[in-house]
Image (cartoon, rainbow, N blue to C red):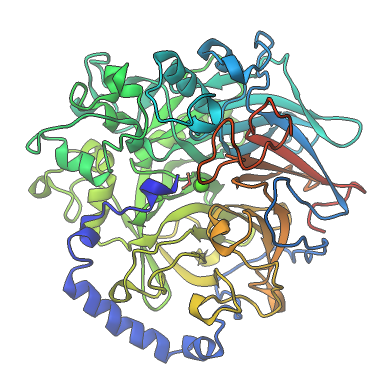
Length: 637
Ligand code: FEO
Ligand code: CA
Ligand code: CA
């Protein structure tokens, strides 16, 4: 959903870029940075050959040895020849035994509520044995980020208004799926439809509790919910996370797009809504449901933009929006247990010139008492990142009463700070980034990988060391180094791992290890995974801007090959690749193929591919794919 993420609503940028004092400060310190040790690397044209200073790697990751696939674009997916892939779940497949068979020509909300939703994005895998190592049977947790309306419904080649039933189908196709899966005799994976764990979570019907410091705030109250503690549904769940205590985190990203209507400019929520791009007006739900019309329900948008936690071991549990983690366009929420036992979550706010966050729980994780962990995410400290020009990183706490976060700036409680997380971070002077997507910690090394997908709005005056290219259509990847592996630290280091784009094109300003082949570079990193060996894998959304389809690449982070990309998976036309998720044994990899068949003018009748069924009567179907080595070995070896 590039359209909104590609705008900026950051007033520090929109009102004429950073304050002039900030620009001067950035220029001065940048000069100092380039005069130092980084200058030699910059002259060499490749700034990432040196290893990080603070890393405490506990193992040496094996090299990537798979047969690299070719760049290109066609209607099918591609994997290395020594690998096999099987479809695990497609849009419309049964999640519960009462699901009717899929009929895309006569889809109903009642059917969709029981079937796998649309546009699968995040994938979590949770082993079902007590030791957390089961790689033959587990729970798959999948987000359904949004609906591609023209590809979902027949007869939309001419623009027309959707019926209420069609809007309800869309709402039922959003949200998430929890489903048991098992490995079959061939080594492939299949859903277990009769399972006590299986459930759909949707935008239209799932009751969700609001918890944490903002719960019960007057700004979260509506006519339907005078408590400010209960909301129906979640939507635009992009990436997410799985916690060590077996819950699934669904990050609410572009919630602004679901609201219609207007507010008077002097309404108390008007400026807040503007900072988040509300109302986006992408969906028609507000024509039938007042809560999506801000002129009728002005507080409703404040009830979205949170991280939702789902107890996947109890299908009857009520999901919870954890307000302590802040409100923004959450891309994901991957967690790690710090050496002192506290849990740290890393989160990007995916919009041009928005910020990177981490949350540190107040209490420690208790491996022996699951119940004690279930509300850990209600209490802790949210920090926003300032990337310094010399490679330092300051994590600044967003705490009511501290610094500018006081009544002088119209913050009257921690609830206000969290509801307006972006404005609070603006005031602290956080670093505006090139669209932060996934942020993935590696527990063994203390390193954290940050995907910055692209930003063509950045001007030459707005570059800084952490966002070093003006007009950046290809994005870059930053490695954050937590000192001594202490993920709770408020002082970290950072360096750029790769600057994406074509290394053979001098105009691109790309920087890869020269060992990278013509297939191994890419643009627009989005989702990523660290495999059980500590190796980095990166999926793209927007690589078609380089003339080839999106896919999954392996990237070496160590030694002489550091910064080398290697192509592993290529998506069919129109699709981005999401998920990446490995089983604990490293022998299976799950990928989410999102919006296959999309493209200029594409519709239900005229998709750019009919993947994966290739049936003339069936539209393309977003699907989860499982990939394994044919010989049963580790993926990537
Ligand atoms: Fe939904 Fe930031 O990708
Ligand atoms: Ca994403
Ligand atoms: Ca995406």
